[in-house]
Length: 240
Length: 116
Ligand SMILES: [Zn+2]
Image (cartoon, rainbow over all chains, first blue to last red; front, side, top):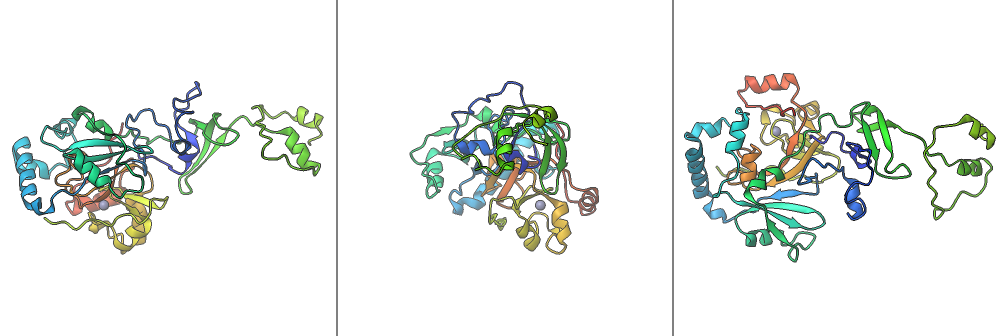
């Protein structure tokens, strides 16, 4: 998922469905709209929104804890060096061996504007860790993530091909909100994409502008229907 | 052990970048000024072009790890041996080949992102 082109994702939805009305579109807060909707990630883990924090617990126990940790690793993988090689061993089997066990600390889901996940042994430690955070989480619900769902919280879908040329997207804001568009160019450096879509041209507004009339007020919210450009129609309206 | 934690990102804006090897997240300026705490051999603080080559602005999810040796999440994400700090869950790009070679020469483990 590397969330390619984060900046552009503020404006587009990926995996444009033909069915419009994504779930939660109306109910979710406005802030949610800024982020890409990625149905594939069940935790909906989004940069800068969700953070997993591991609270420091009893620093004086640190040395013992490391020994304990090493002992557990040894116990689990048979020999110490196994862990030392972890980065070289990319097999799925080895990844499975890293799944949480009963002795690992738990993941806790804290509901605030969105969710944050905190790793800790006890709920009281989660409450402690949340103290002093900008939003008061203390009155919010804290739920323990079941062991078998813990890895899903940390999984993200590979979005390597996100915003590739010729792929389809759906716009998220402005007059074209909800409209399908096709990507015609991707600018990696500036993190911008250029799209092609069926224009929604407000001919009346154009005429008003050309004739130097007062521009329509903001309250006059008219969203022109999508139509292919018609020279004939434009001409009929006096637009050359 | 007593590892010194990595710098905490000074902002969470668009200038954030993640190291392509260890996935540490900091701002561009922080990488430029102090390099990557886990990957000093990249010498990002000596050659600013290196920051661009070794880090990416494209990543998903941030995790703050205070005690990597004890954290299950850190172990699962294979960042348990790195210094405490902010990391991303995943990057999609691989290190440029010359830097992969550099890792090999230095006997530094490097695992490219898995293709799905
Ligand atoms: Zn690094």
